[in-house]
Length: 422
Image (cartoon, rainbow, N blue to C red; front, side):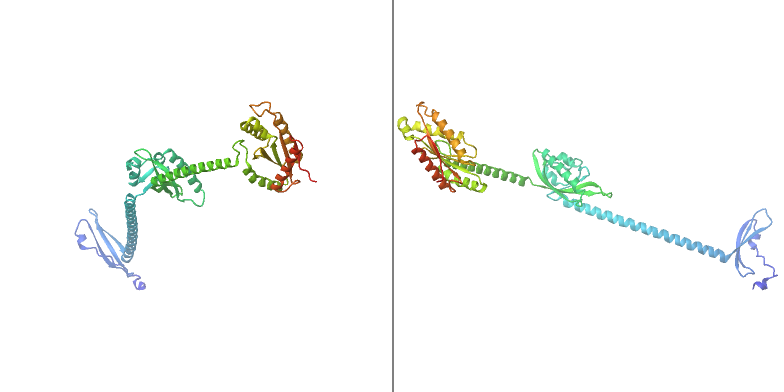
């Protein structure tokens, strides 16, 4: 086709007659050229000039450009529409979340305001940001009087001390794997009318997006009645304990009276019968010696007959005091019966026992023991037996000490005799 067009004259587009008839104006028309393309011609005439300006555009190319722009416009519109839809979806989702949160908050408040327990929230400084109506029923303070105040300011001094301990526990827990653990504690809170209200609190921390505590929330329960019952029970237990202690003291006093000689104040024979086996068992266990000494006042009947029983009692008390003064803490001094006395001395040899008893004998011999008869002369006789050499049972040791006492009496009294194995 192009070969046939070579050498041919290009046709001039025909100017629209309407445009030629006017001084100025513009119009357009289409025309097929030699290359077979359809072109769009535009004509424009300017007043004062004797010609018409003609310009041509390839119709297919113009249409392609318009189609491309139409596609771009359609894509842009689609993208804009998609963005609008996404934005609308996010807005709808956020709205639904807000509505759900609002409904949840309303539900929470509805439940909280109708609970018997105190429900509260606070900031990181434990300053109340919310508290339900139960607090006013329990403590008497209105909602407005509590919101914005610190928990510490609502506590008694004792409650503030408890809160300090809880704060230290919370700090320690936050450094462990138990972070966020609920803490339960009891403390006394102030009542508007005065006095205190004991509340059991369970609280947990509320964390922010940075992982730090930005508040607390918890539940409090009035336990004043329980604490009162506990205090009453404690008082009752203390009263019972005091009564029991008194009974024990009275029993101990009775036992002591039962084991003490009422005249001399030293142990009696009943105590000796129980104590001597224990002391002998201890001596056998430790491998130590144990001296058993039996003492008797010489001519005691004569003292009673000549000076009366009151004088005889003075003599018995004087001898008991002498024996107690010269005894160690571990020694046992007992009134065996009548004018007879027994001394049990742990970890003491026969020679040491003889020196101790001889000292008693000499002191008694020169003591004015009868106030009404200062010149009265009182003496004692004694016998000594020592474990393990002289016996290995209480009965045997007492019998041999008594045998030596009898020997001292036979040899003239006012002397000390030690058992000797034959």
